[in-house]
Image 1: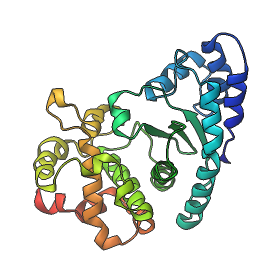
Image 2 (image 1 turned 60 degrees about the vertical axis):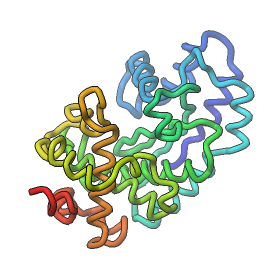
Image 3 (image 1 turned 45 degrees about the horizontal axis):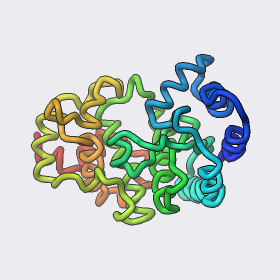
Length: 274
């Protein structure tokens, strides 16, 4: 458990020769198959590309490797993970740091060109070697909070309700605010004003709060302007929901084990929209 030294994967990949597709599979995808419980290397590779992993046509160079090693994000994440685990009495997990694609899609650019994948027992962080220490700490806080929350709820993607999803995202980013200050919070926490979000909550989210399966309400979480759903709607509402409920529970650690319905009933969304 702990931070996996993927710097060794990076060095092996850069120093090896041959087709970049096969090299990526050997040094980055195959070692993750057991983590994602699959033997289908091609499908896992495609899935990770969709989430932002660098592609073979934009490979990691010697210069990139040098920048990575100078920053040494593994030690930053290790320190943050150990601090948070002690503070929150959190579970042990594995953390993998992998290179983000050179030219991320618009949504990833809005996230500061960094993102994470959280499983119940592991985290995969996709980052650029130019990430700042505080950005990396914020990403680690957010994703490790998910691990802690999942350890309590025992939820999975197929059964998780929309309400739990928006609370989970709000709680994780509230933890970033508590640990680092609002200046390190994700851009979606500042996208809108509360007055507008109340109407959107009533129209878009409230009818589906208890819908199960993250894939079934993906649009409500991330938004889709083409369908009239504001960008990052579920994330923004989740943060504001937790912000309004926080006065009762005081700290992130106290809220970790509070169920989503209780958090919702303490928020102004429940009080204002009935």
